Amino acid sequence: MKMSFFRQAVMVLMGTVTLLSLWGNCSAEEAKPSGVKWSELQRRYEGVFVLSASRSTRKVALTFDDVPDPRFTPKVLDVLRRKKVPATFFVVGTRSAKYPDIVRRIHREGHNVGNHSYNHPDFSKLPLSKVQEQIGRAEKVIEGIIGFKPRLVRPPYGEILPRQLEWAKKRGYTVVNWDVDSSDWRQLSADRVFRNVIRTVKPGSIVLMHAGGGKGQSLSGTVRALPRIIDWLREHDYEPVTLTELLRIPENRKG
Ligand SMILES: [Zn+2]
Image (cartoon, rainbow, N blue to C red; front, side, top):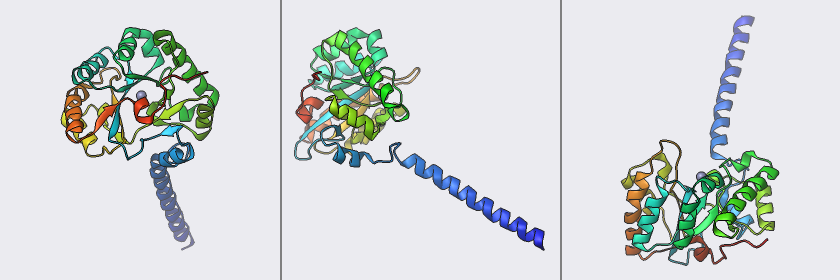
């Protein structure tokens, strides 16, 4: 009798532990590493951490991460040139050092160049000194190619901690995430990429797309969706502009 009660108690306890650990996993996935929601960070760091611009403008910004990539960046640039649309490209330091001509072309064709770190780590897992090093090293490479230090920064995966934003604020960076996610990095069809954008875009939106990818990752859906997205935006009275025009800030950082 005593044993069976003991066994029952152990089973109940184990069940509770299992439930608790599952719950813990779910919460961990939903919460940001900093424990603070992006919308809260935008409020707390107004003008320093940005998800979208004012909703009173018809302007929107198309942004392309993980460039330059010789497989996809020139194709995206070709579409933008044909459609006469300025956009914003977040470049990775190591990739820029390898393909400086593509970075030069991005700048020459009137697009914004932003800093997307030196080699794409998750900032929320790094101490501040490493984040400073990531942004600083990429900045040196970019400045060597186009002659100025970009003010725009996008942290890889959009992850950044409040203390890192404090530093960014002091140094005159503007950290820009997004409010519209195309999810194109999942190698979606052009149709899916198109629909993901048009169903969530609003006045003042910042749209996340990619013009560079990992080994074997295809962004052909992005390249094919892009002309349709631009046409749809214009038909619906949206004006695609660079981030610095949308946010009315300079492209270069002093200091
Ligand atoms: Zn990235």
